[in-house]
Image (cartoon, rainbow, N blue to C red; front, side, top):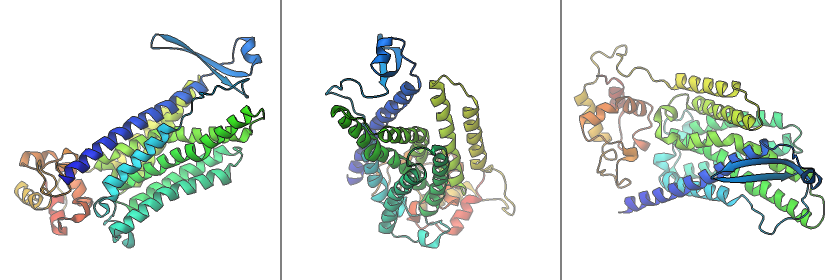
Length: 400
């Protein structure tokens, strides 16, 4: 019953997280489109009252006229719309999911027993939890310091962008050394998502509140507040597509179980940023297909890096290889405690990710994935069923 209730809570939290993320990212993408699509106002009266740009749009059978002021408008309404709760809800629900799914069972989901760093491979569950939290919030601290030190007045944003790109490669590399594959991808995405939400909480909203307070007091707002908010909003825009990909990556073991998982991760991060750049420029009326072409090329490189060897090809010295009967025996002893329609392991009320090995046909259909996760040491999780090296070698030599 406890495992069922945890899974049900997982379902509700995931639902909330996805809804909040759709609302937040959707609003963010809309405002980037709006900001980049503004045209100089045609009416003299609009220009005279400080309107910087405008956009006419039609949607849902109605017409909309959006206007942006370069300076303080003559009057601000009391019901001014603020955009922040979607961001906070996304982060809070995502962190709750991380606690429920990963930190509740760190020995299974966080510890990387295959790490080339011996101390990381031997972490206890509690130590892995502490390290994960330090990694998550430390990533934000480093990113924030880069922003403050490299481009404090937003005059060197190009150099800052390069520094943030290098930071993300470092984060990707460290994550796969410190944590299990699936957790590494998730935590890298979580570092970016934490930076996005923290940008809203610590910089964008406080700056906007200071600007509004100055306007209502009849004072001139500090232009740095607007520039800084714009800078962090731009960063959030380029983080969106990579974060979405990293958050759904736990369904695809070919990426996070690879020896070069950090390279695959980095390629996807840059591909997402390049593709997002195409749409940002498109909203300004600039069509530059080189950006999506470059993003697609990076995805193709990721495909090449991640592509496994033919699981049916004979390996040197394999002889006849491992038979289906031998593989089935190993799986029945080491895997079906969890991967069955009715798992016997107390942590699962159903087969994880819907992967069950109740029959030879089910096992055979999952041949490539089984070989990959067993050879890499990712499965069984935390090696809780004590699979031996000889059994892993037998799985590696399995071919039909």
